[in-house]
Image (cartoon, rainbow, N blue to C red; front, side, top):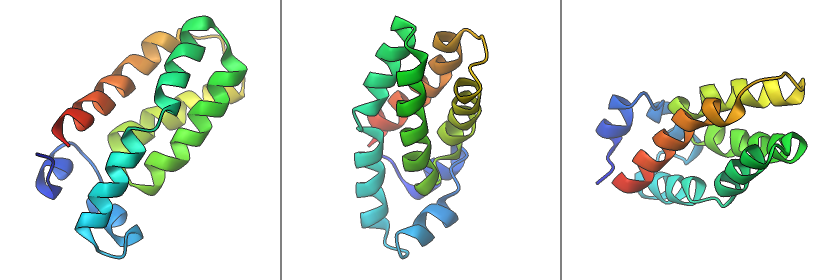
Length: 112
């Protein structure tokens, strides 16, 4: 089961995340669940695999806002970097870059 302590252990800025949820832990965890189960993660994964980087940027940018508002730092930081790379159309292996983001998201979902 995901707890505040476990989130902190993983590097999540729970103080910031909780403050955005008015200090309500139950609400914060509900928002985390909704954010992590956002179908934009799957859409981003598919767009990257298909090489559709314009669409990937749109999904990445949207998810950056979601995970940023929840202060899910271990997902936000690499997702933010990838979003900026996609924005500037930098040539990169985005599937490989996305892999640790997806793994962290999957880890958190499994612990919900």
